[in-house]
Image 1: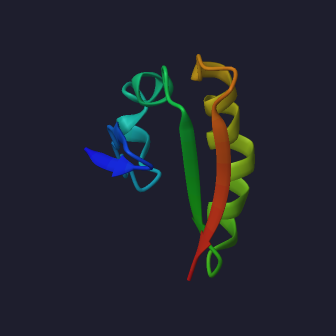
Image 2: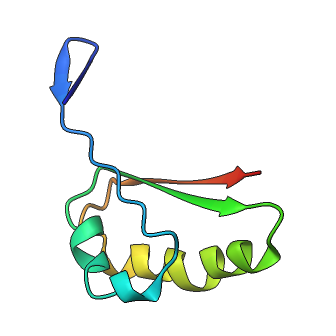
Length: 76
């Protein structure tokens, strides 16, 4: 729980490291989320490719909140 602007918010961070073995759980990660951040490694091109071709498609498929904020960040 974090407090921002006087509001108490629940913050949950999931780090699957892109591993497919977590694939059966990913739909529950996105359901009802108000914000989603996807991170890729700038030193590994395939992480950027997977972000666009796999992960963003899953976000669009499973995200149930039409006002969900979706962001991408790079990691080096």
